[in-house]
Length: 372
View 1: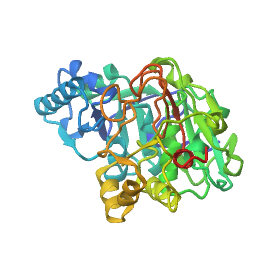
View 2 (view 1 turned 45 degrees about the vertical axis):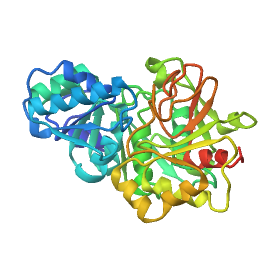
View 3 (view 1 turned 135 degrees about the horizontal axis):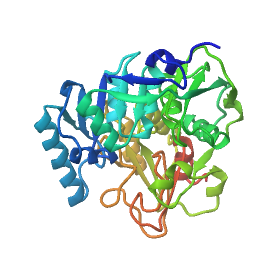
């Protein structure tokens, strides 16, 4: 059996213990900001990046408080601090991380780095604190499931649909690494697959040209999909899936395009092309959230933001707006939101009785002009 990507990068076989020193450590004002209360020292402060990247600008007093906490945290230990750059994961993946490097974060979307031959791990805040204090992380190297990617996506489907289809068919990924092999994918599509592969509990993910495979993801068989609501954040990795036809005939109040998997310039170009000659459906709120400042600037230069504004969409600052308890983007009682964001638990976008479902850019845009 050939050596798997994770075994190559960690220098140990599946089932063995690997002790690694990361190249980069990311802390954001998302779930990982709790690390500020656990760290007592920093072994390698030059490796740590602290970013304010969720709900930018802050939409509540609590958000503003967190901003102050992570800023003081960065100053105290000499960490690099950035704001107004967009989503930390996407910024690192596009601008900083190189093949062969190891990234430790506090989010389960860290598989995004596997799209470019690096490895990312999302761990708890307490574990993240120990990594910062000791410049080391110990883990048992997981087994890998190899997935051969074939075919071409049908019309009106996107890579988010493909990822959701894969996850729905493979709910048994906990404690495994996922390796996507082959397929004529763009760099961004590889990122989407790898970042979403950990949504049901996988440790990390990769894309590679060659490798052994145990299963197949045939893009030609993909249909529009939804990640359905769940009760609370602790059950998010067990949230169910359904065909996008679930939303047909229902009143959809809002759509949100943004996040790591939906706010890149590639996604914004697709959305802008789809709204050509269309009209925003009456009473439908469409929010566009570029993933990074670079995506925002490119969209402005290409006239994409103007197209969205003319269409009637609202433009948010670059960043992650998929977890908004209060402030811009929060949903009202009983409303239904389709979002490219990965959170669907009750209350993730404001009211506990609002319904939130993950969908592709293609599905959201079709809903915005009444085709769904």
